[in-house]
Length: 247
Image (tube, rainbow, N blue to C red; front, side, top):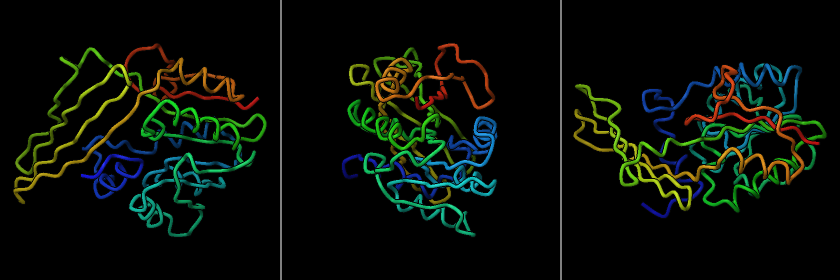
């Protein structure tokens, strides 16, 4: 495989992205969450939009949605989903966008922000998010507080499925100095006698790190939740969803 970059995840995962058994979440809870925060019809920018399920669902609810992703394969899934062409689509890196106070809401969901390879890239992305928001606009960003205790000798191996049809194994290695986790989801197809490798590399960003960066770029932290059901964030390992407001 060539060197991992911003397009790697999307191009490898796109053929499997609708397979929820591989850990790809359903968009419905996210749609309900953002709808509740957004309220009335809004101009929404979805960065790292993936297969577009969320973006299309929001557009179908009357929001004016622009979706950005680096992966042509992911955007092809979005276009198939968006049969009425309601979503404005841009194939670009999150670091290449140049919007100026055009959006009421900017979302970065799933692992999208964490796919950026370094702290510098993540900070640049947050600066562009702030620049894209209208005054009092809101950014909704999903992050990860990893459970580092799971990694024995900086690694772990999870077996997520064993069935007659296939076996799914996920080995991972953590680098705490660089705050990176490299993993592969290995899908052993017993009928085809084949193995598919789905790579993923993230740089996790601590909540305090994200909050500080947001404030530097003029976004005030509003609140953080532990999931899409509005459960209060307690600092425990797992995902977190932070909301920021442009001041």
